[in-house]
Image (cartoon, rainbow, N blue to C red; front, top):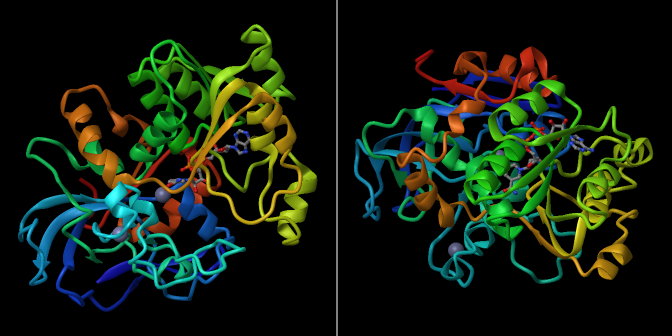
Length: 391
Ligand SMILES: NC(=O)c1ccc[n+]([C@@H]2O[C@H](COP(=O)([O-])OP(=O)(O)OC[C@H]3O[C@@H](n4cnc5c(N)ncnc54)[C@H](O)[C@@H]3O)[C@@H](O)[C@H]2O)c1
Ligand SMILES: [Zn+2]
Ligand SMILES: [Zn+2]
């Protein structure tokens, strides 16, 4: 089959690789009909994620048709059309029983990324996301093996197009979890840092849940313009407004917003020092957005962090967070927990995640898709790849 494989930073290729086969009774083999490139894939593409091996198949946002089922698969049958969550979860461990699916203790034989790990078991394995997360082959491919198929894949009813439901695999539940964790509700004010796909899904979710005032911070005018037109956000371009937190305070009676959402993560731009230190591996992550979020949030508010972080941040300003009594909510998304309710919203016409898509490419052009998305060319917001060619 054809699949998008990683070789080194900025070197990904569509190659012919062996077809996946059933390895466990709870596996299915999925024929992929649509798959997307995530901002998390860009961390890999830029060579920032360790334990990637040459030839690893990328991709954790995908859907398709069940081709083959293992003997222990009871919830699916050949021919079902499903969206697959990016976290692989067993459904029966301590954490899965608490619907903390991203913390599943049984699916990641890899190390995970906790530095001070002691005896703690790794969280869930992820599709196409390095050997730290289990070394599972991803779904930017014609076929993919999906383990624990009784727990993850969600059957999609007839009448919906792939692109309407594809983002249930990751960015839609991620934006939604970020907003739910931020306790956003009717009348809330919220600042969303990052107008990429995750920030946009957070804006859509904040509107859905009744937020009144949404500030959105980025420096790509085309992304901010789209967010303003689609979700009614107040755009803040940090190339023009030097201190977005100060601007937000001025708009909120010098209290700050109820919640800030960091949809940027460890590669945040804006601190030359931290960018240089992270390049030298003296710093794990840039703390630029976290500092801005702490400054922009009102006393007793919430900082919700879907953006990915790793290792140390020396300039974290935890004292300010303490003084303001802030709460933090972070982590990989428990996608399985939110997928059914989000599908219901899509069926009711209350969510239209597909509107953010700018690029439809055949899988064979996936390498170009990565380049366009990474360089923010052609006003790219989101790339969808179709193994069978254009739809
Ligand atoms: N928690 C999860 O389960 C989960 C799931 C999906 C993605 N993610 C993470 O979410 C983050 C965003 O993903 P995406 O797909 O939207 O990626 P993206 O790279 O397309 O978007 C990030 C945006 O942040 C902006 N940005 C950079 N520095 C900034 C700053 N200082 N202030 C404000 N904006 C800034 C960039 O210009 C860009 O538009 C990534 O870190 C990704 O790994 C996490
Ligand atoms: Zn992702
Ligand atoms: Zn589990």
